[in-house]
Length: 206
Image 1 (cartoon, rainbow, N blue to C red):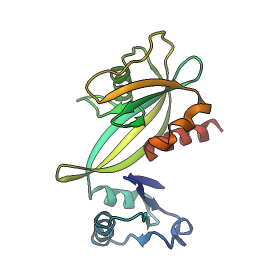
Image 2: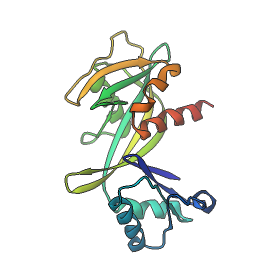
Image 3: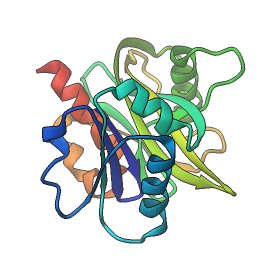
């Protein structure tokens, strides 16, 4: 299953018909060809409402490959950083709580990108990846293009004693360590994809 966020809505690509049936308040369709899929996406993006879009096909890889060809693709990577107290490093950027992330430099793999972005955006050194968490997907407009960004997320550990501070020119105005029991304070003002990262880590931890 792929869950792709667009503003306050999402597109769900699924290979289980039971998971997409019965969504009467949303758009529901089946993939048959690129032409049909494009028509569904054109409708979804042209209408300003709160309806999500569910698309079924029994070959999920084929469906995602066709779906992604509709967009300009941009890769990214980022980190959910934990300190020695197991607090979470969050940033405030452009009016919303976020996690440090960014696009790769030439020749970087996703792990290298994630580490560099965390260290640059939070002014710290020496973070280490502990494990992969999940990819997230979101769609946005960039000039005349409609972009599908896939972000690979990693859990990281920071054992240094330097306090994180906003770095670079990324519009970050605050960095903060939050324990798990205070994450609800940012949930009303963050992105759905960021909530997915925290939820994925909770599932991994059981």
